[in-house]
Image 1 (cartoon, rainbow, N blue to C red):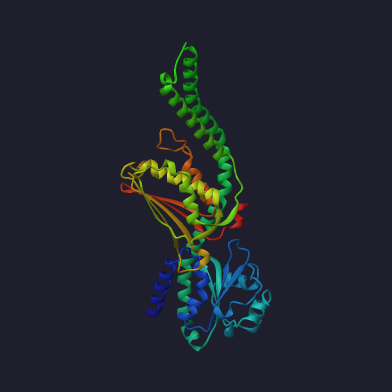
Image 2 (image 1 turned 180 degrees about the vertical axis):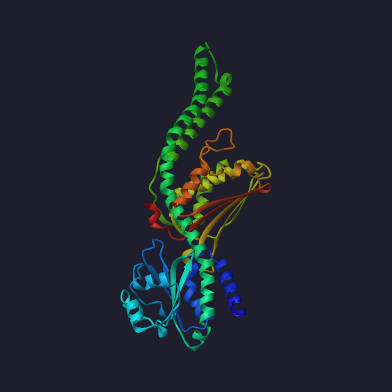
Length: 410
């Protein structure tokens, strides 16, 4: 069993992890955090990378400049840890055993003071190990320290594995999204043809009617002209949706202001916003990210249109705000958020699961591609889109990292 203070440390560790945007962030904090709370002089963590090709080192503050060759999965040290599953106490091992362990990674033992090596297993697989510079208290507490890390690894590592799988899924989504989009072009073309046929038939009927009239004035056919105008606009919207969906544009990544992206999006739809609608903005003008301005504007305009259509034209309210989450953690893991809230009637429960599926819409004249396209664009920019809705209204949350990951572009 744990000593009481180790149980408290486990609770404190989990509390710190819960504050992070990503579980894997804790590995950057790991060495300094545990040197501070455990009876050890120095501590380094070696963790298996995502590709499972090498163990990457994380050192405490005073050793962060250490440069070591990566420890490979086929090295003597890793093979021994996998087979023995035990903590290695260097002073208690035979010299021949230590020479065996040093063989593949001599610089590890020469550069660092390696006195204790604790393997980190989870789900019966070795995911890393901890190297400790020990003192007398370390050896006295070694059983508790080893037990602590065994339990800690079985909690944190599965969370990180799930997180990595999700991130890899997000990374691959853009490629799948593009292929999925192309596969649906045929289905969309048939749908678009059917949608275009109806307004074209109406226009054709009215034109025939006009040609058969012996004499007429504009005032006599004003209603028919207005219907024809609406039909042309409808055809234009359908064609634009088709082109936007089927045509892939290469991203142009620049450093942009979230505030400016929002303002320019609002300006482009200013005439569509009813005069009585209350528009509140809580925008931090200093927030900037690396992203594609045109694609982000496309998402914003689509979401804003949805909000405008959902609210009451006399008592409607839309609130747009920006903020950063994870600001007290590592800068590389901060998320820059745009929140768009409306006070409309909310989304029907039966439709919530279909929000990001193509060809799903509650609008009589909708194509059902708006949110699906927004979802794909946000993924392609390395971000996310989430929707929370109740009878009191709907919030759409767009989240982007500060830096654009070039790997997404491949």
